[in-house]
Image 1 (cartoon, one colour):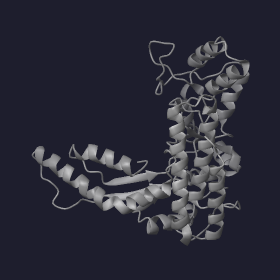
Image 2 (cartoon, helix red, strand yellow):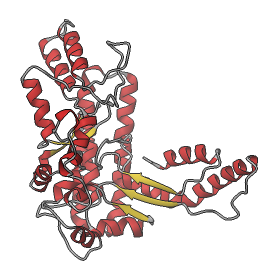
Image 3 (tube, rainbow, N blue to C red):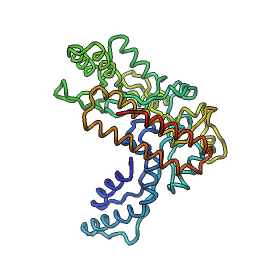
Image 4 (tube, rainbow, N blue to C red):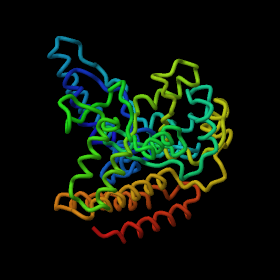
Length: 368
């Protein structure tokens, strides 16, 4: 779930059907791998605080609804409140951060994702991509528009799929052949839905844009955005095929991989024992880069996302968009104010406060 309100809405929907949610997992909207689902600037710390303060009320409200539904179905209701765990994930990278989530925010468990891409024992990453991840620079991880779903997608600049996408554009053959058709959704040009990453769609869309009568700068901008879409159906399966020597689908070997930005602080290839020891504080395997607290990292990602969205919309902001950006900015500022109090006890607190004031100043300088 993205926030407490989301948990309440979805929990009530299921409870009214007699279904009990045994775990709500909160994931950062931007500090994650794969597709990103940004909130309207509501930071993870404030979301976790909401759950901490309201988890008993959440369980009590859902229990009433669930028991009513069970009785209506002629089934036995719960005599006691069943287990309902609250867990979290998104950008966790140190033992200290895990302990902060478990102790201060009283989570039942913490999820670790992207760092395990560097653990060959437990993830299917082919040797070439694994080597690229192990030696990557911070700028190699970026939030892209590659997904045909129209949702922001964490991407990796060194991946062979990125190289293939650029090569196709350079050869004036943008887009991908579309075999699996899992993400077909667009009917702008065809009766049957097609994928926005497909060669068919991109050629049709480019032709439309080229003859639109817009300025050359606008045409080039739109064509660039069209070409950002990439095939995920093939790309996300290639790595497991290559590693396990499974026959490639249509001889397509380009690998798409979607690590979270948190991976920039991990360099190397690790055993499962080493990763587990790192998680539980028996070993440190992060690289030599200075690592801000996970909440500061998310804050920066949200401000970057906010600035990019505002910049891309600035030429034609309507009243509704102005309200959206004002609310977004206000929510981030509320989160910063919360962190000034909540993060007072973390390691290197002085540096963290310095970073909070820096980002607050940066945000305040952005006019809408």
